[in-house]
Length: 164
Image 1 (cartoon, one colour):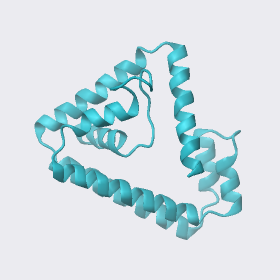
Image 2 (tube, helix red, strand yellow; image 1 turned 180 degrees about the horizontal axis):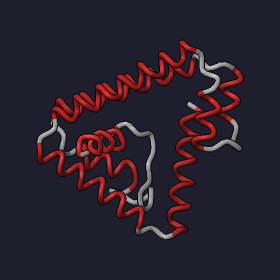
Image 3 (cartoon, rainbow, N blue to C red; image 1 turned 135 degrees about the vertical axis):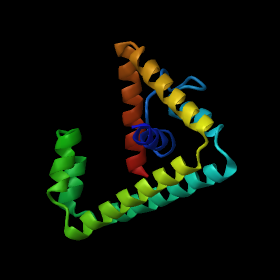
């Protein structure tokens, strides 16, 4: 259970393109602050692993995006579809080659998680767990207005990422 949790924490802290925080404009909070605090506990070798994985995931994402048909792009652009509905609609249109590429990308992500878990000390694992728990607690303590503001900031980052 801890291994699965740590794998998710590693991905959430190091690879995610966006997350939430109390106020994205406050230093030390928001996605950048959380990631920076977590990275302080990493060795140089671990930081290199993270950097390499980010580059590989970006390249894999671009390679997958390059295979999308106009129909698939339209599904992704459809703002009426959310979450699982969008995922399922896209999944139904994937070719065998796209499925294989996706599975290969997933395997690479899992290999990264395992290499990070294997390289982390017990102290680092405990710190990761603490950071994740603090992050969850901060989110739960936000007002509805703050959550809405954070979600809006996430959407803007997501849209900015799509423009690049």
